[in-house]
Image 1: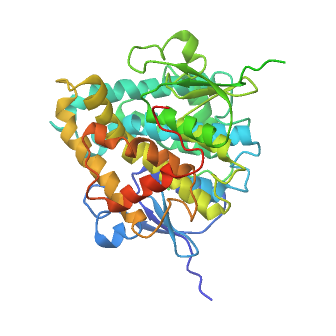
Image 2: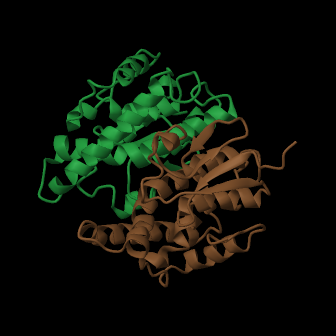
Image 3: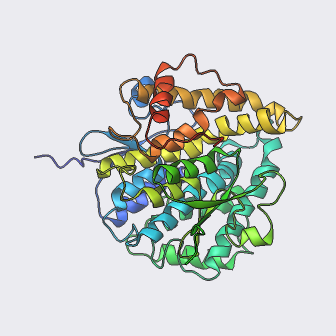
Length: 205
Length: 205
């Protein structure tokens, strides 16, 4: 017998995508080993890492059977299925996925990428011209979220789910990229609801 | 009694994302009404359309209960659940979602967007500087797919699933954006396997 956790998370402290996975695993009370990567220095592009995820990205997780799973929202699904974090009704599961695909296509490339450029890499001549468009689309994503939260407590159905975790990850640090949430009272109230869920951890934990 | 289909697909003939939905519904033998939109003239941004999908995108589908579901891959999930197109094993379902999130984050923004710019909108001073990076990342996505297909017939588990439909949609028209599939024999053989599935329809059907 060994006390080594069977789950190994190839992780990054600054990545909201990686944080999603830590948040869910913590809320489920699952133990896991964290191996930290720098997302900017090429260490996720080595032959060793590409054998785990040919797309060269964290988070990637080694499961108990030794296989590897990547894409943060697919990892959320894998661990949430069969728990209260994956909605009980099929229609609500489809809504959860709708919001998770929205997050990856219409939210993360703007809100997370602006944060990374502004807060971590610093503005460069290569990224500067793209900032106004990315900021505008980030605010558009926030307005879409606000529309939902005007008359709903959560994104999918009536309970806290992995759709909320997926959207929380980069929304709650959007200010690090300069996004102002003052005009989104629905989002601000929802952020507090997420933070008051049992087992919540912070991105810096 | 009415013979009107209950499902209404807000559609676009040139959109691979919309085609995914038509492909699955056809393979399932489900009838649906198509309402065509131009994705470039703002017609998905009217107040009427935003009431169906606040993110202003097709495909969006009106379900039999009158509610609306958007995000192509979430729509695929909704209709595939309970059929052979959604894998029977949980681990394979997670793989299907892994590839579907890969498709939306690492494939579509490059292969579909380059196709749209090159084949539909024409090159402009605004898009031209972004083309080399998008072409490079498109080829990277193809190489990740090729790695999988070197020793597997399908993306998730050992059967044709919605992960294959999601990736087929823009891969099979990648040449319209100038992508050359000659160096990807695994992808070319897989395209033929997808096309030989019962009930397959073309994007132009």
